[in-house]
Image (cartoon, rainbow, N blue to C red; front, side, top):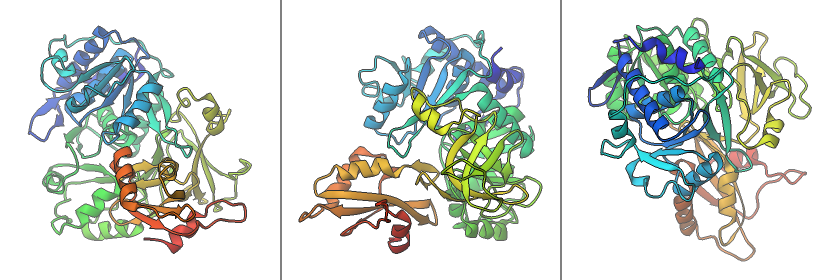
Length: 495
């Protein structure tokens, strides 16, 4: 038995229906995809990977990248995708912490990505010696590794307010239970065709979009990235689009995006960042469709969703998924708050991760003994159970669907000459959801060279984390306890 493989991939071994259609027009059937996954599994076994070994993947969005994910599941390995925007110093931490047996990357990174880890490095380029080329020579059948519901299937890194990234351990059942719930809830079937323009290195693009398509047997228009022209050409022959708010604001900016273009579409899903109410309203006025917003986290997969049939209310994230328990508690003592009062979201269910890799103390802090996970997100729950998120206790900034943790940026800024302290915060942005702002306080008598500071930030941080505006001020606003009041900064310095 292999809990995840048996449910997602094995049912398609004789399915000749189209699965993945790429930008070049090529179409891979479900049957051929399962065969390719088996070839990938053979390569992993030939390289000596045993069940439980980690495979780090920082590679472009290709059919073979998805086939490698499926092959890792079949071989019993633990799949660890990394944001392609991460720079070498960031990747070095993940590699050092996860201790992978294999690293798969783009050709440009092949010579440097492993550092001194000792891991084998391969690319997905078609040239000889690559993982893809090795897979071409392998059999299309593989003896699937035994893995149970509680065995690890994936390791996803999510930064914390301490600035140190944490590896969320996701089991086979974490991924499968969530995929089945969403497929049922959103009524996804083999008659659907999904426009897939999301990255495949995080929960939304990989586990929500791909796993639900596999559960249902739905076809996927597999785009290398978001492109308005391409999406407009695909909507008339598709039924679903999963995206981040940025997708929808950019589509709305094009006059060709209207009800006629969406005539065959039945579902637009938004997540990974808050959807502005104005975007929700404008979208319905233009197309006649109401976007379905849902809420989840790296550690939990999806937690809530607005209903497929029923009222989708702008600014809310709907109800707990079937089998998932959500409660709103007082962050100070963990007691339940009254309905309608603001508190922290806690969640328990088969979707919740096992804990943080190599961090038992951090796991104990955020995962209660009774199984409830402390999300750090602040919300209210209505009498009917509908959840409305009002803020983030962990001070997370979400821009373009990517999580940005201010502490990591602040630590870098505070180490620079002339900087006494800094505060990084997010402000609303009509396209990206939020934009990153950095407030800087100079050391006594010093002047901050902002241009030089930007050069350091551009060198040391991925682009999506880089502040868009730098503000120099005499002092940061603080409360009576000495804590920086970022709410004051947002109100007084919205940039």
